Length: 253
Image (cartoon, rainbow, N blue to C red; front, side):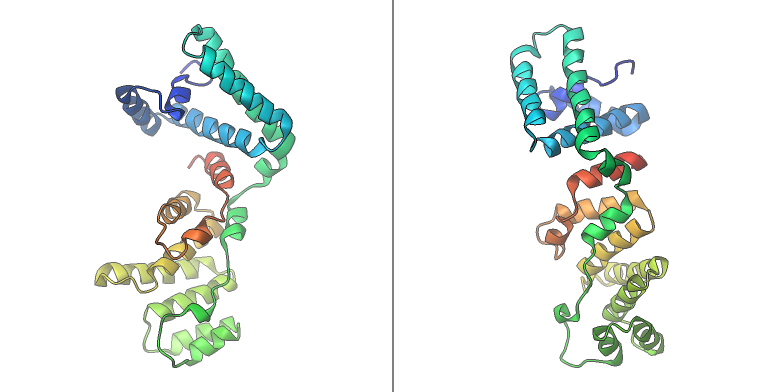
């Protein structure tokens, strides 16, 4: 497309685009790389304006934009419409420069990992009253002993797999942790059970972030955020929506 920003995006964001045109635009976003990049940029820009709206200057610009949109958007000439859109995007860029350029440049998958990570504690274990050697080592934060006990164990159920994965995470051994969490998810898929399912999903997302596999990680995080019944719904909510958008935009995911 020749225009910097497709004006249909504005109508789409405000749910004012006719249904047929909205479906066509959604399809274009999915299939056309340039359109998708413009859409991602506009989303980040709008969120940046919202993020910076705590400051009086940007807040005033938002008010001016809303007034201009309400009174002039549908009656304005195409050139005027483009000017309004370009101005909003320009102000969003200014907001990023003024309030968040360092944040934008520095925000990466490691930041998302740090926002989401909380050490797993055994007081949330849903199991019997006995504590085996592996669990005792975990309580003592002896990660290598946890792994030694796991290797020596003849019963590698989902709890054992998960605790071993967490020990690997504590040792920054994310590839190994990912492999064990995949086993938990695979066993549940095979058995139809959900034993440690939520835990494995959430920490799988964090492992993927640590491994810089942004697209896969964001897919899982968004799934958890959208499910209020997920055990880690609240914890996933601590991961900034703006940071997710920035990392997704920067990596093209």
